[in-house]
Amino acid sequence: MTSRLPFDALRTFAEIARGLSAAEAAGRLNVSPGAVSQRIAALEAHLGDRLVERRGRHLVPTSVGLALFERVRPHLEAVEAALTADRAEPVMRLHATPAFADAWLMPRLAALVALVAPRPLELVTAATPFERTRRWTAADIAIRYGGRFSEELAATPLVAAQIALVAADGPAGGDPAAHLRERPLICQTGLDEWPAWLERFGVPAAAVRWGPRVSDDAASLRAAELGHGIASVRACTVGERARLRVLARRPAPGNATYHLVTRRADLASPPIRRLHAWAGAPG
Image (cartoon, rainbow, N blue to C red; front, side, top):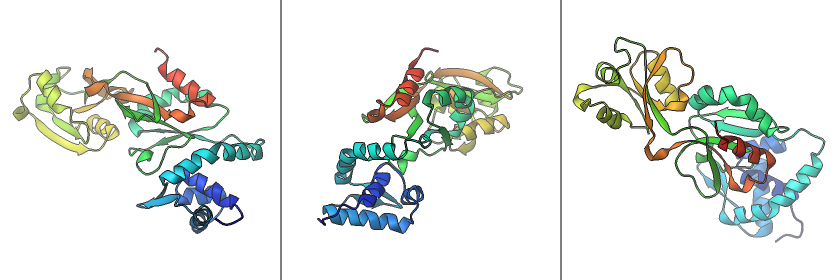
């Protein structure tokens, strides 16, 4: 261990441990990505331990690195708070899929902004969850679909656990069985609801036609709107789409639904507590 603690290196490591990429950490610290790697290497040399490892294009903390971060995080945050007391509050990022954001979040966005005030709220929409490539941070709030979540996460259900059958208006009217027989069925990766729908309405698989295959609810809804077939989607993503008719609803498998999700360790934060209380309130 060298005699002098490289404090800049510790700050740089903390940004990586909070889930930022090397490029994002470099931008926040106003240094080059190369300097990020050099600072972390200097900290590892100082401590004599490996603190990060590379997974693909990303740097992630090792178990030793995570333990170090948990010990020093309160002290770093206290220093940062003291240095930024007169500056703007840090941004909180709300992550959601495009379909859910469009149909459910947008009408409630003003309420969410008020709940996290005085911190600014940034809505980030993406079909791929950010946690597939980086770790959660204290600034992350997410809307995630599922029935169970890891113990380190706090999850509060937002909407009823329902799947909806939707189609554009057409000659089949409101008869779901007629729609299933007359229109192509839009297939969505990871949401194979068609066997259950066919069984419910007594339609044999041999009597249906298969339509386009898409990756998410947003594409399924748009394909149904444009008349490419009938779609099975999470009911809360339908929203106010004038050209679509909801033909039927049923409970989602495993009672899965959309949840407000944050790190459990961040429940002490007033904005996070307010968000979970709001999500869990009746109506």
